[in-house]
Image (tube, rainbow, N blue to C red; front, side, top):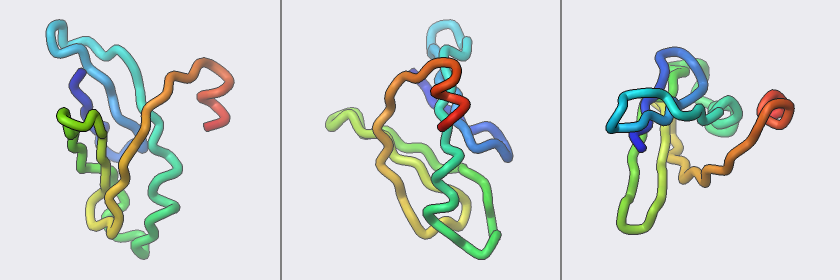
Length: 82
């Protein structure tokens, strides 16, 4: 899969590289609050994947923290509560 950030939204789109279609969403809404930066550069904009170790990393513009993210699938109400 390919992951892309959505400008000024706290989420990533998971994209099928063969079809270009969005196959899922990754909610990143809680990350910014764990890396305060005085409201400077509040957007998520860094995504890196370590294929060798199967790890996904994200950060934001001018954030002091790099997060390693473990993905899990959620549905409906569980997503709304996330």
